[in-house]
Amino acid sequence: MDSWPVPDLALTGDGPRARSFLALGIGSLHGAFDHVRRLPYAGNSSRTDPGIVLSEGRGTCCTKHALLAELGSELGLPELALVQCMFRMDDRTVPGIGAVLERFDLDWIPESHDFLRWRGEAIDVSSIRLGSEYLEHVLEERVVAPSSIVHEKVADHRQYVDEWRRTSPDARGIDEATFWRAREACVVRLRELLGP
Image (cartoon, rainbow, N blue to C red; front, side):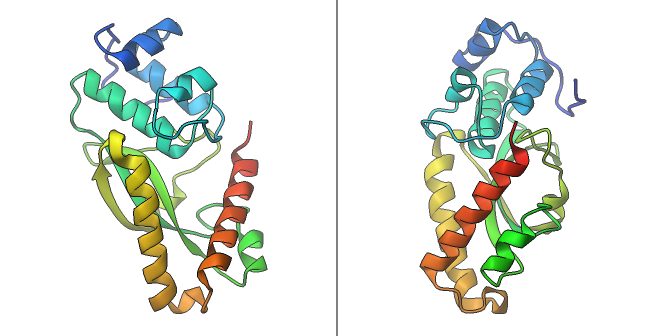
Protein backbone atom coordinates (compact mmCIF):
# COMPACT_ATOMS: atom_id res chain seq x y z
CA MET A 1 0.00 0.00 0.00
CA ASP A 2 1.23 3.47 -0.89
CA SER A 3 0.96 6.47 1.38
CA TRP A 4 -1.44 9.00 -0.10
CA PRO A 5 -1.85 12.59 1.11
CA VAL A 6 -5.66 12.43 0.93
CA PRO A 7 -7.64 11.28 3.98
CA ASP A 8 -8.32 7.55 4.03
CA LEU A 9 -12.09 7.78 4.08
CA ALA A 10 -14.33 4.74 4.16
CA LEU A 11 -16.28 4.26 0.94
CA THR A 12 -20.04 4.31 1.27
CA GLY A 13 -22.58 3.18 -1.28
CA ASP A 14 -23.75 6.75 -1.86
CA GLY A 15 -22.41 7.12 -5.39
CA PRO A 16 -21.77 5.04 -8.49
CA ARG A 17 -17.97 5.24 -8.23
CA ALA A 18 -17.94 4.17 -4.57
CA ARG A 19 -20.34 1.32 -5.32
CA SER A 20 -18.05 0.12 -8.12
CA PHE A 21 -15.06 -0.02 -5.79
CA LEU A 22 -17.10 -1.67 -3.04
CA ALA A 23 -18.20 -4.36 -5.53
CA LEU A 24 -14.50 -5.17 -5.96
CA GLY A 25 -14.03 -5.47 -2.20
CA ILE A 26 -12.26 -2.11 -1.90
CA GLY A 27 -13.61 -0.17 1.07
CA SER A 28 -11.39 2.88 1.48
CA LEU A 29 -10.14 5.83 -0.54
CA HIS A 30 -6.52 4.73 -0.11
CA GLY A 31 -7.50 1.25 -1.24
CA ALA A 32 -9.07 2.77 -4.35
CA PHE A 33 -5.89 4.76 -5.09
CA ASP A 34 -3.73 1.65 -4.60
CA HIS A 35 -5.97 -0.44 -6.85
CA VAL A 36 -6.08 2.10 -9.69
CA ARG A 37 -2.32 2.67 -9.56
CA ARG A 38 -1.67 -1.08 -9.91
CA LEU A 39 -3.85 -1.37 -13.02
CA PRO A 40 -1.93 -1.45 -16.31
CA TYR A 41 -1.40 1.77 -18.19
CA ALA A 42 -3.36 1.17 -21.38
CA GLY A 43 -6.12 2.78 -23.40
CA ASN A 44 -9.78 2.14 -22.73
CA SER A 45 -12.56 1.35 -25.19
CA SER A 46 -14.23 4.61 -24.12
CA ARG A 47 -12.44 7.73 -22.97
CA THR A 48 -15.62 9.47 -21.85
CA ASP A 49 -16.63 7.10 -19.02
CA PRO A 50 -13.98 6.89 -16.29
CA GLY A 51 -15.83 3.97 -14.71
CA ILE A 52 -14.57 1.81 -17.54
CA VAL A 53 -11.18 1.72 -15.80
CA LEU A 54 -12.60 -0.75 -13.29
CA SER A 55 -14.57 -2.90 -15.73
CA GLU A 56 -11.66 -3.17 -18.20
CA GLY A 57 -8.94 -3.37 -15.57
CA ARG A 58 -6.73 -0.74 -17.18
CA GLY A 59 -6.57 2.97 -17.86
CA THR A 60 -4.62 6.02 -18.94
CA CYS A 61 -3.65 9.09 -16.98
CA CYS A 62 -6.90 10.65 -18.19
CA THR A 63 -9.35 7.91 -17.25
CA LYS A 64 -7.62 6.79 -14.03
CA HIS A 65 -7.44 10.28 -12.55
CA ALA A 66 -10.93 11.26 -13.71
CA LEU A 67 -12.29 8.15 -11.96
CA LEU A 68 -10.57 9.05 -8.68
CA ALA A 69 -11.61 12.71 -8.96
CA GLU A 70 -15.23 11.59 -9.34
CA LEU A 71 -14.84 9.29 -6.33
CA GLY A 72 -13.41 12.19 -4.34
CA SER A 73 -16.37 14.32 -5.30
CA GLU A 74 -18.76 11.61 -4.12
CA LEU A 75 -16.92 11.54 -0.79
CA GLY A 76 -17.18 15.32 -0.35
CA LEU A 77 -13.55 16.17 -1.14
CA PRO A 78 -13.76 19.23 -3.41
CA GLU A 79 -10.06 19.90 -2.78
CA LEU A 80 -9.14 16.77 -4.74
CA ALA A 81 -8.67 18.43 -8.11
CA LEU A 82 -8.17 16.90 -11.54
CA VAL A 83 -5.31 18.71 -13.25
CA GLN A 84 -4.41 18.77 -16.92
CA CYS A 85 -0.87 19.87 -17.75
CA MET A 86 1.53 20.21 -20.61
CA PHE A 87 5.00 19.01 -19.75
CA ARG A 88 8.31 18.75 -21.50
CA MET A 89 8.57 15.08 -22.52
CA ASP A 90 12.17 14.06 -23.07
CA ASP A 91 14.55 11.40 -21.84
CA ARG A 92 14.87 13.08 -18.41
CA THR A 93 11.15 13.14 -17.72
CA VAL A 94 10.38 9.80 -19.39
CA PRO A 95 13.56 7.70 -19.44
CA GLY A 96 13.65 5.63 -22.61
CA ILE A 97 11.82 8.13 -24.81
CA GLY A 98 14.95 9.92 -26.08
CA ALA A 99 15.72 7.38 -28.80
CA VAL A 100 12.22 7.83 -30.25
CA LEU A 101 12.59 11.62 -30.29
CA GLU A 102 16.01 11.34 -31.96
CA ARG A 103 14.41 9.55 -34.93
CA PHE A 104 12.45 12.77 -35.54
CA ASP A 105 15.40 15.10 -34.81
CA LEU A 106 13.75 16.38 -31.63
CA ASP A 107 15.09 16.81 -28.11
CA TRP A 108 11.63 17.09 -26.54
CA ILE A 109 7.95 17.58 -27.29
CA PRO A 110 5.10 19.11 -25.32
CA GLU A 111 2.89 16.33 -24.00
CA SER A 112 -0.45 16.46 -22.25
CA HIS A 113 -0.83 14.65 -18.94
CA ASP A 114 -3.39 14.43 -16.16
CA PHE A 115 -2.90 13.99 -12.45
CA LEU A 116 -4.61 14.90 -9.19
CA ARG A 117 -3.76 17.67 -6.78
CA TRP A 118 -4.63 17.61 -3.09
CA ARG A 119 -3.87 20.77 -1.11
CA GLY A 120 -0.98 21.65 -3.39
CA GLU A 121 0.51 18.15 -3.59
CA ALA A 122 0.53 16.31 -6.91
CA ILE A 123 -0.72 12.73 -6.99
CA ASP A 124 -0.08 10.52 -10.02
CA VAL A 125 -1.58 7.04 -10.20
CA SER A 126 -0.88 6.51 -13.92
CA SER A 127 1.46 3.60 -13.27
CA ILE A 128 3.65 2.07 -10.60
CA ARG A 129 6.55 2.56 -13.01
CA LEU A 130 5.99 6.27 -13.72
CA GLY A 131 7.99 8.63 -11.58
CA SER A 132 7.24 12.26 -10.89
CA GLU A 133 10.21 13.76 -12.74
CA TYR A 134 7.86 15.29 -15.30
CA LEU A 135 6.41 17.55 -12.58
CA GLU A 136 9.65 19.53 -12.58
CA HIS A 137 9.09 20.27 -16.27
CA VAL A 138 5.44 21.31 -16.37
CA LEU A 139 4.94 24.05 -18.93
CA GLU A 140 1.39 24.91 -17.87
CA GLU A 141 -1.46 23.38 -15.90
CA ARG A 142 -5.09 23.96 -15.05
CA VAL A 143 -7.88 22.32 -13.08
CA VAL A 144 -10.53 20.62 -15.23
CA ALA A 145 -13.81 18.83 -14.64
CA PRO A 146 -13.74 15.03 -15.07
CA SER A 147 -16.72 15.25 -17.41
CA SER A 148 -14.93 17.55 -19.85
CA ILE A 149 -11.35 16.37 -19.64
CA VAL A 150 -11.28 14.27 -22.80
CA HIS A 151 -12.60 16.94 -25.14
CA GLU A 152 -10.64 19.75 -23.52
CA LYS A 153 -7.45 17.71 -23.34
CA VAL A 154 -7.38 16.97 -27.07
CA ALA A 155 -8.23 20.53 -28.08
CA ASP A 156 -5.79 22.10 -25.60
CA HIS A 157 -2.99 19.77 -26.65
CA ARG A 158 -3.49 20.57 -30.34
CA GLN A 159 -3.57 24.29 -29.63
CA TYR A 160 -0.43 24.14 -27.50
CA VAL A 161 1.43 22.06 -30.09
CA ASP A 162 0.44 24.42 -32.92
CA GLU A 163 1.81 27.39 -30.97
CA TRP A 164 4.97 25.47 -30.01
CA ARG A 165 5.61 24.45 -33.61
CA ARG A 166 5.26 28.07 -34.77
CA THR A 167 7.29 29.75 -32.05
CA SER A 168 9.81 27.35 -30.47
CA PRO A 169 13.25 26.88 -32.00
CA ASP A 170 13.16 23.41 -30.39
CA ALA A 171 10.42 22.43 -32.87
CA ARG A 172 13.00 22.73 -35.66
CA GLY A 173 10.35 23.48 -38.27
CA ILE A 174 8.56 20.17 -37.81
CA ASP A 175 5.32 20.00 -39.77
CA GLU A 176 2.04 19.05 -38.09
CA ALA A 177 1.77 15.53 -39.53
CA THR A 178 5.34 14.66 -38.57
CA PHE A 179 4.85 16.02 -35.06
CA TRP A 180 1.82 13.80 -34.49
CA ARG A 181 3.67 10.77 -35.88
CA ALA A 182 6.52 11.52 -33.46
CA ARG A 183 4.07 11.92 -30.59
CA GLU A 184 2.32 8.64 -31.44
CA ALA A 185 5.68 6.85 -31.56
CA CYS A 186 6.43 8.29 -28.11
CA VAL A 187 3.07 7.11 -26.77
CA VAL A 188 3.72 3.60 -28.11
CA ARG A 189 7.12 3.61 -26.39
CA LEU A 190 5.58 4.99 -23.19
CA ARG A 191 3.07 2.15 -23.13
CA GLU A 192 5.93 -0.32 -23.57
CA LEU A 193 7.83 1.31 -20.70
CA LEU A 194 4.78 1.34 -18.42
CA GLY A 195 3.42 -2.02 -19.50
CA PRO A 196 2.44 -4.82 -17.16
